[in-house]
Length: 361
Image (cartoon, rainbow, N blue to C red; front, side):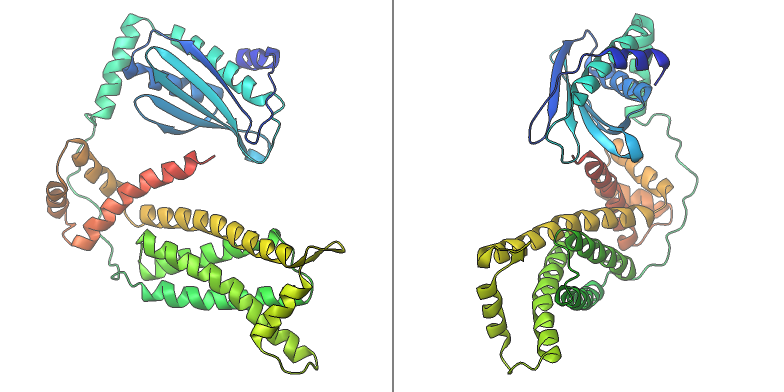
């Protein structure tokens, strides 16, 4: 961001927002058409040093980084009927934005109007031609050859299943040991468990070459449930082995746990607190685990296919060829196996998936 924009940002009068998710929105009129409006919005984002995470014909989104290289706000810009709506939303858990969202919106509007004024009728016409060429991939040069597909095993779902269930039992045993020893910290350990399960499942995906998300999602849910159910069972076994208690069943152990309840800082919350803590465990682990699974799966789908091959296939889709025709074009370049072709299509889909992950607030 240049010095003029920094000075203008410092002069903006902030409007504070207090909400579950603080936000600020403002609307301006523009004479630009829908072909050039979003490219100019993106130029404005770049001028401000914000990370562009998404754009289409009428919308663009960017995220602004603050201290510690952490995204602090997401800025949404949408175009409709000659009006540009600019909205900034806080990222994180804050309830009060200290006026930061209003500053982002007003700074963007000022920078956008500066950028808009840099174009006259002639340069706008040139920009419009450039955008149309880029959208149609007119400058793409079809390569004479493509990298050959690597030898890869057939997808095998049994590897994630077996590996995932073993991992869940091991993690359940570790959590049980830490719980019995009084080291378990609610909220922190759930995040760690989710990261471990998501990481292991990602490695199993690579090992098995299995990428069907729906089944992997179900497997992750099963892993989470097994982790926390086995945690209770392993706690039961540890307590039974370390004390000279009269033998009692696992069901009786759970009944005792319900009767004792959950104590937090000398306050007994009873069985209700215990149940709520278990629900919180499942919810935190699930949402973080799903995010780790989605990001790991997307990264694997992108990395296993060379970008030149993805571009080649996508180019033919842009030229409105059918899937059958694109498979034929890939075959001419040595990508004859159906599995290899499917993985190319998965990589194209993964690009959209990566965009959606970046857009998350």
